[in-house]
Length: 151
Image 1 (spheres, rainbow, N blue to C red):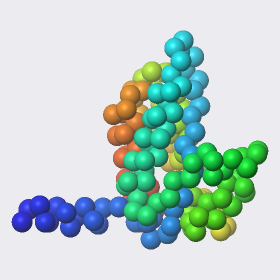
Image 2 (cartoon, rainbow, N blue to C red; image 1 turned 90 degrees about the horizontal axis):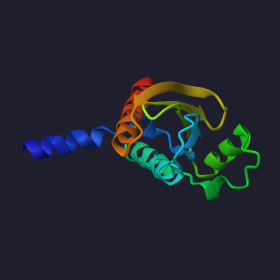
Image 3 (spheres, rainbow, N blue to C red; image 1 turned 180 degrees about the vertical axis):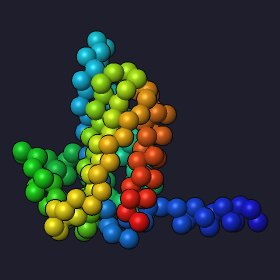
């Protein structure tokens, strides 16, 4: 019985922004850490991990990949919003992660109305640790922040 209650609660958990179709644009990384080792492959995987967790936490979200926005050169807000609108989304999520050191990273997230270009929610979050689990926790926290702010 406890499992049935838990399952019912989990179906209520996804972001309330799911009522509005959401397009998650490719997550970007700005690495200003100047660390000597090449972490490109690990960071690409973590950017996808962050996007996947946000999608999982947002019922019905659509992930746009780099190919979907390839002809937005330069990547202007108007062009990216057009790509999001073409998916049927009403809202678009722009996310940039800045890595300043191995221990300190920030997420800048903006939720935008694709029809008007109006900013709905903006969040700047810090997290610690450049590893998969830290990125996963940060993505879950961001999803909660977006859910709480959009209610």
